[in-house]
Image (cartoon, rainbow, N blue to C red; front, side, top):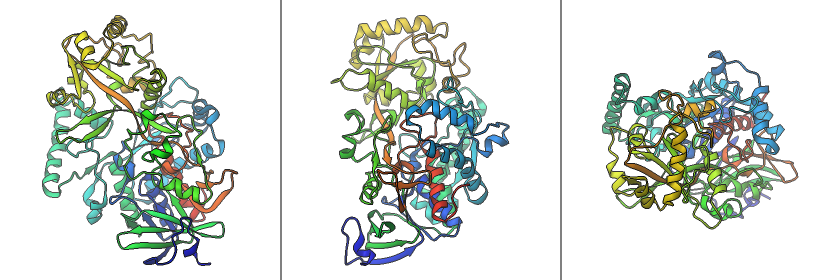
Length: 577
């Protein structure tokens, strides 16, 4: 029987074209491109098939941070630790969700992955030497050096392929210009208070305006845009074929082995033979609401920051080949609090609340006016606490409350700080205001007495820089999110002196943690634990090695790159050492 008749979805005769390669990668985010570049470097002919018309997936919209403990950049910065520390930390955070085989594979391969891309490709990194893990009080937690980010990149170096790179999100860029967490972001936040910061922002914005005039898009690529662009450049240099607008409809089999896939293109169906197999890296299933319905609360199903093309193709293909989706993780989604942004044309967007929650002078409250968590904890924890705190049957939502002076200094959601105007966001209804606390409560639909009690109690301690209710400012992670110029506690300040501002925040996600079961070689496995020959999964298509927990920033991209690298090595017959 021909391979053509052995597809899982019944695609049979009449295919328009046939092509062959060694490895077919389905998806063009960090995981897919990492697999492709690794395999191509080791001599394989690789095709990357992307469903979307543009490349980069959700990675291109991300902040770009990569958690990779014991990486060489940390060592060069004088941060030396062995693998046992992050292992102990993950054991503490993950608890019963700790999968020893996959955790060991990740921890051993992550530093080698960084070294490989640094030394052999166009990917260069900057180190997060001052970025701590989320739970600094736990055994093995790191206080810096475990994170890296792709170095900024000049988009012109992609040549004509720049047209294939997905542009950044409107909500997380400024007129299409990406701003990188760290020194770059601090400059934008303090430009009205620091001549040096103002000069930095002026230089960047001037170049951005030139790029818009000449190229109609920003070319100072940072964050996830820089990561994807550098991986694209590396893939092109190695002869990888990048095909956009080519979703995989079915897998091809020879006996029990996966040997390719059928792609649907504008020219018709193409049968792609892949001698060494297929890597599934389609971005998970955050937009597959039917599948999500059995895994997550209804409140989190519609608000995801993931690319719209992530509709679960990898999961369906993997299941059709004998794999199974692991939905038993601590959380099926990588949660993030978001606000719905109304635009003047009637459309809406989603803004992820990453930065301002940890600053001094803001709290989050529920409809009854009470606080429910440490606002400066990780974004995943904020949503988890909100889901747990809201009574069943009520809308799952909270309000971030601050004064106008806070907003002008730090921003509030998409309403950026001074010198950008806040008026348009007030007029649109995105930001609610009140000259007094009762007025603000009425504008938001928050219980007045409850909000007054909460602010009175919070302010009574905040004037001394204390937060006995939730302990803001007590870990390195909290303090990093705060304002070091504010003392005695960079994370705590009273909320006094109206007018007062608020923005409504609801549960959202970066994408799925739940995914296909895999082993330490990134091979898709059956429910019985047997690997399916020729079938790999990485990124959000594989069940997260973090078990549904969020121990540090970058725990989506770190494993995505690492297991993509592992898959590429294994397909090339060069398993990780």
